[in-house]
Length: 509
Image (cartoon, rainbow, N blue to C red; front, side):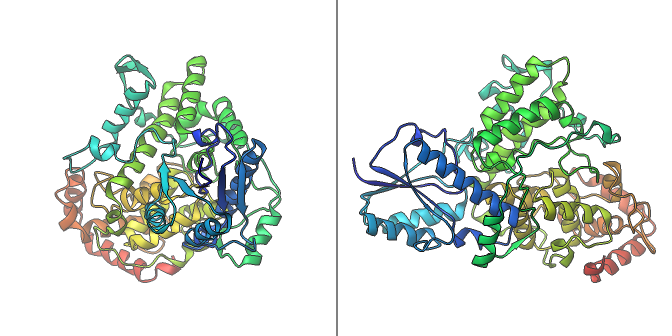
């Protein structure tokens, strides 16, 4: 056997992969903490720490199993800080005869590794990461000839293919989707449960980042780092979710509340996106638990969770590979305004944004409605350039990797793709935010006021958005009602002037 160097990226920590099922003394595995990955965007400090710690744990697991591993810490004297130089260095130093890697999930890394291999003096090959339920090309082929890719159709195909919540060829109970049951506003904080965390001391890693000059955003408690960074911890969190949170997950997954940052969400996205745990085992574990506890948990709770994973998550990945790299340049509305300064501090008088951004900076986490209908909603209404929105979302969340971030942000949230991901822009006035929870309580702005002193900015910005993009949106069949309402309104000029005044002093809102 040829002496082989195998690369493992920071989001490929899958101990169940076929590569690791037997020890081969001719194979060496390479993992690196490198500036190439810490510096391409300003990341949350918890995100960088999470990846580094998970990589270190994974490396130790491989070594314990008998594999040969080269692990380069950020401050290692032989760390070249980028993939190309490091691979060249090791091939020369250790006389490797072959190079292999697992297919990366980001387009930039996919291109980089192909370019690296084209220049190598030794043979190379790639293998599938064996994580996702579909291939890169599946969604593009599935919707071949279609202008838009409807997630619901894809989701149903996944349910059938993997026999999830199915009765033969039909869904259990005869209903595919319980989305209408997944929009409850939390009224009673007594039913909340604390998140299951594994507090870890990470002062050494925090000091490493500081000493190395890595620029990060957000905050961290170095004595109680709360995220799972091993397969064992990830499985424990999955078990805790089933036993303690699943019973209310679906009902309150869209709730907006100041009472708790995690609500009934599983906190498994980082574990899945680093591949410490697989989407199929998560879904099958939840499904099995529900079958055993149907008298305590309604199917709406379970279906809502499963849809997010085998539906939305796989769908977003499929969009990514079907449409990149062009997707990353789309700007349907031509938005070009800069992101307000307070997106980096949370210091805004708008309580909903202060809460959502403050939570993101403090926990490297926000659930999908906080991302879509609070921060994303404001960015779209205000006309922020999609590039700036992408960079913020990619950096601030611990689970953000481009394949899942950019399709959600530039597509679902900002409608910069013109309708590939969603059939309409997801925008709202203050009414939606108020309905979903207590974010409008104790706010400096009045959610009921559309104009005048103290009027909530969302209300006038909502109509300003529709007015300025009428040529692009009026013919959308899902938006016609909005324009019919707008045409009947008698205070159009007042609303538009109010919105303009807010946009002119956006950093002071």
